[in-house]
Length: 101
Image 1 (cartoon, rainbow, N blue to C red):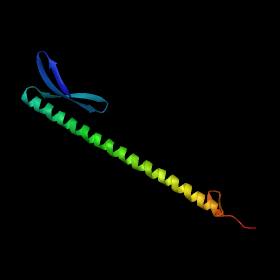
Image 2: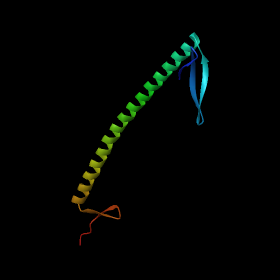
Image 3: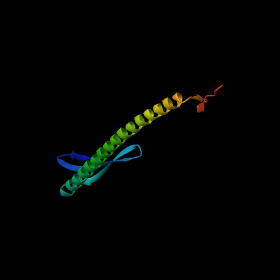
Image 4: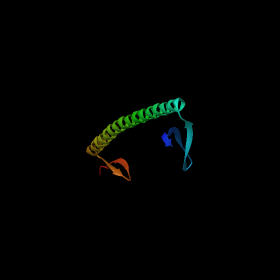
């Protein structure tokens, strides 16, 4: 997005992506073009704020997921210690009680 100087006159163009190509969309010069530029600038600022908020949300979610993963690992470790101390062992991935002979 931006102003382009052609000769000694400034014109406002909006760049759009169509497939693999970038296409310039002419919006004019003067007051109407300044209004379009301001609207585009506000839209870009709103989008940047939305992306920042999404990044913060993902970071908070990753922190929560990390805490839950750590709690899960600790719980699995405690369960394993409990079962081993009570005479169980693993056989092909399953916990089984040891035979008393």
